[in-house]
Image (cartoon, rainbow over all chains, first blue to last red; front, side, top):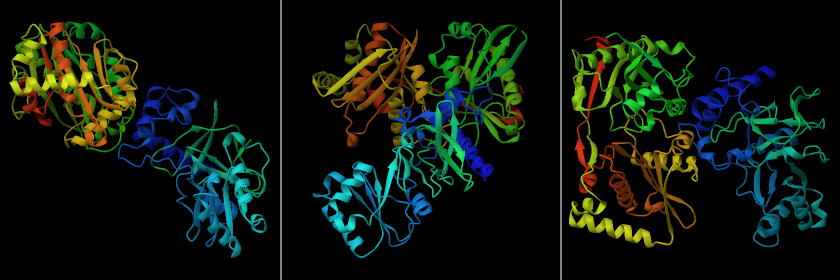
Length: 255
Length: 349
């Protein structure tokens, strides 16, 4: 498992060096480690990049052959919900976030979704809130994803008899993994999307088929293994270090 | 005369001995700076290497060569990989971003038979560098008086689109304007007045500027090139921001920018100064449908001619393409040729 995960990462590094202007420039002229792509050049922070360094450079994250430039802050939500909450057809996923421009695109088949701005629940989003309420009345499952305060605002706007039926899935920034959470939670980053979730074992599991985590001198660096464009490789986010879950045998991030 | 040739890969090899002396002696443009060539090569699909022919210790000739491969959306492999030597490659003797000038430069003391010998020695060095996969060598943008150094059995020569040249024949810019048609003269003056008075347009020009984001400039140049459509045979890669970052801070490079009131970059031009042959190099503009302005192009030419005249340079060159428009601005055509050397003829007399 560990070797296969590592091989996927090495493929992404090689391909990014060969085709993506941002990484070509960074790693050819400065260098990187694990692996080195230009012998003898080790770069700064092992070749990892801070998210701030990518601001205004999204065009350079597109491979030479072309590709989309949109950043999806909800990328990876579907697979992580399916893995950690067994979200199935008939469930409604409500994303409660003032900054989310569009609904998630990678939910499992048959799962509906909607986006709610918590400040507009009594205004422009009242119709969407009615839809959520109807769903709960019918006894269907509603999974609400968002920040703690945003989820509280949603719960306050729902009828008291229904609010407790909502499955709350608070979102944590990689910086904030040490804070206490309930049974469900996600790790998400505005640039990288959803990186993993809280497992049944209480550890922060990485969405390892899609995300690689590596320790660098500047902290943990995340790589999206399946997003071709914009390519995000070794992006520094939050604190902690990579580890392995002794119960599941899969990668985790330890706060 | 004993000539020897070597290929220097700027990505891996140090600057050749005597290179600074040679560039000064031959008055080469800024793009021949070895540090810039290194940046350009790393960010290329077809990286440029430098061929150097020496007569004893002294550099007698030099050439920029793009080692090309069938078009793929990938940068070239790092120079340490040797396994690619059997793969098909061809060499284009071509200066990226200075397409109107030959990429072969001879020492002024080298003439006639010496030049022919230097070219053959250089070709043999290219063959050794690329390996058995070399399909041939193409010399692009060769001046007519240089063609004879490269021709021979099996070699083909043909004429390309010419480059445009404006000889400096006036004491001031009014002299240049007086030589244009009345319609063109009036329109250039009108555009200049309109741009000067437009409070929503910020025009800035300066040498060695560091106040502009080079990645923003690169993005505009690349989108402009993509919009015009690139020829299938163009061996160049997109302009890299890191290259421009180094290039624009040189004191002999002038950057001219046009921005609208909200700071959007509308058009950009780089002017490459030279003691005799100044180059109007990059021009890129946002199309009017995306907020661009009409006629900034002519204002740019007016500013470039202003420098040509005030600095007393011998000529201003403006590359290939749009020859009818450039002719209306007084530019003349300078003949350019291509010499194609198939593999069996490489290095042979």
